[in-house]
Amino acid sequence: MKAAEAVNIEDLRRMARRRLPKPVFDFVDGGGQDERTLAANCADFGSVRFMPRQLVDVSNRRMNVRVLGQDLALPIILAPTGLTGLFGPGGEIAAARAAAAVGAGYCLSTVGTTSIESLADAAKGFWFQLYVQRDRGVTRELVQRAAAVGCPVLVFTTDTVVAGNRERDVRNNFSLPMRPSLHNVLQFASRPRWLWRIATGPRIAFANLVDSRKGHSGFVSIAQHTAQQFDPSISWKDVDWLKTIWPGRIAIKGILNPDDARRAVDHGADAVIVSNHGGRQLDDVPSTISALPRIVDAVGGRMEVLLDGGIRRGSDIVKALALGAKACLIGRAFLFGLAAGGEAGVARALRIFIDEIDRVQALLGCPSIGDIDRSFVADGPPTWPANR
Ligand SMILES: Cc1cc2nc3c(=O)[nH]c(=O)nc-3n(C[C@H](O)[C@H](O)[C@H](O)COP(=O)(O)O)c2cc1C
Image (cartoon, rainbow, N blue to C red; front, side, top):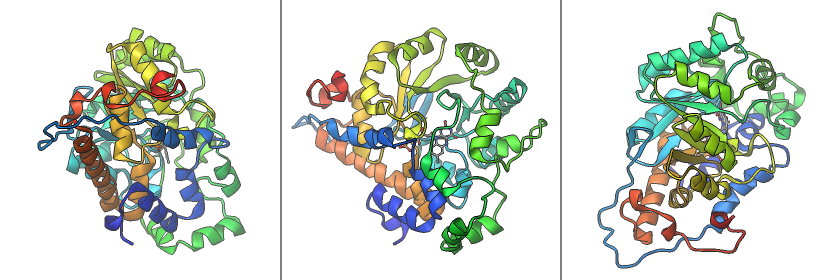
């Protein structure tokens, strides 16, 4: 099966599983500890029920949105993902191109495999996600480099002060460089196409950090890198500091608590991204869709609210927008596409979302996605996300 034949995101996931060595697939697919939050992120979308309107003229449908000053043709930004080049041909550049082709946003990770400058040669208007490094000089340089190429939005990720306990990775001995054991040599040998691509393609490294003057290596294990360079002392003072050195908009990613959302407003952030890192960090935190309504209420229109986590259907995005999100970021869904078919696979993932959103809008009686609100979802029991 080719990526273009995928009917839904789950098809792309199955293709990704067939194409990637198990340790690599598990790194993308897995989550923290018992993976309960990972599962809840997806499952809780199912407990939100639509409340459609009939006899609305839906012959002319629009899903364009304006997010953080940027016009997008659809309410989707490809989420920042580290090590993207490992998952499919072209890595970040392929993904950013596929996003640009349909007018979606793209956010580059600090620990991506493509440098800010190389991506800027291939794509315009992408956002930059920052992991504040212990060395604030290196952090400042990263921020300045993103500003120099014209990134409009800095995404400050706050939920990764230490690495999550990802037991699949521990069991698979997943690290960079791969530490061969008989078991994982066999797992890698069973994916010769992937091996060939990695062996003959550009070196997989943390491209934004590898060349910095402080001499960070691109070849350290992910957990080691997180422990060595990510700064567990980050605080709201860093938001204040970033505001002094960053000329564009700032979004804080990893917010689940409404009090933190209020603090983000007080510290002058332009947006919060309701996120639990796709269930990869602290397990047993709420799913993002269940956390969203209270955060939207807490900020009361004083800043934009975005959401990621568990989005596998266009209807998930429509539900998040109905509950007050401006737009959504998608992580694994596009990575599965990338693994299944490179740029064409990411394009397929996006096409699936576009078609699904469009159909939901029509059936919901909501021709303009900008007009969606809570009246398009049904009241439910007290445990239902909007009421929690
Ligand atoms: C393989 C992988 C790598 C990720 N790397 C980063 C990263 O470098 N920075 C970051 O802020 N979030 C990172 N994330 C989290 C995503 O930005 C996003 O929050 C999450 O994937 C959303 O959940 P979803 O995968 O269910 O869509 C990563 C997620 C995955 C799956």
